[in-house]
Image (cartoon, rainbow, N blue to C red):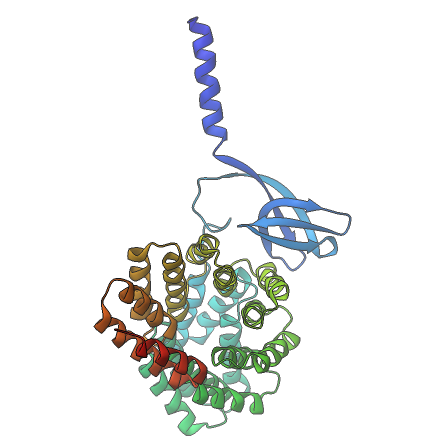
Length: 400
């Protein structure tokens, strides 16, 4: 072969190999200051729609400050355009607040709020810090509340509960520890005590969106979907940019068969915050509902690749969902590994025990399957989900 022709062919191959790893994307800056990256798939004189990890997000032109085209390396594994890890601001803020350094804590929470503009975590903490300036609540009580929140974030529920109850012993109408006690009981699967504490928060502060959101989640968990929808919509009415509330509303709508509305709300959650872990979990649930396990697996895996780090309960739910997806795909080994991780992080997820029992039945491990089904029944009973209790009892009776 002619040497010059060979060189041209080699250069052509190198060119293709090099540039095939790059894709064009638009960087959209909203008037709120939020930055979104994705490929534009539709453009009209009123809005643009971008493909964000397989989900179409719509932005109206009057919301957009600027649009710039960039070249991205398609082999990059990063979750966004920033090299910083925004979630570290929240963690550092908690560290400072728990040690009584409120000035530096406030600075870190504000940085986190700027980096993750829809997050409620840092806004709650800033509201808590402001109480120290505006009320007669002792600094020690504020510090104890932050210490409890720190333990709650890492799944040390009993320790966190002791901090919150200590504060409530002195300040029984202090909304924040009441809210966090509700969160602890929810994580422990004790849904009615959780609802009681969260309803108390609403009596103290009728415009507390987080309590409405959490109560909505709990009612959905026990099968009271219509009641859940009322609370979740109230959370959004109070706070229209509440990404997690849109995600939870979407998940609840799946349960009542309103699939188009469900998908719209899950997409809205990502429009508000494309790092909203609950939205990706919700999309996983959405596709599992239609037995589209590969799509579900993809969204659960994406939720682990975001800049925002999952909480202990989210990590457990993600792996529970992954386990379910792998089970549908027939990959029982991977399913079992994921389900065990889910149970390790949160031993109160009934569906993880139920799916694990399903694997054990299929492999003839009937004694272990019965143990996990009995645990499933216990958790459904604790949650007050009596329909699921009866269904699980039927599974137990059918065991050899």
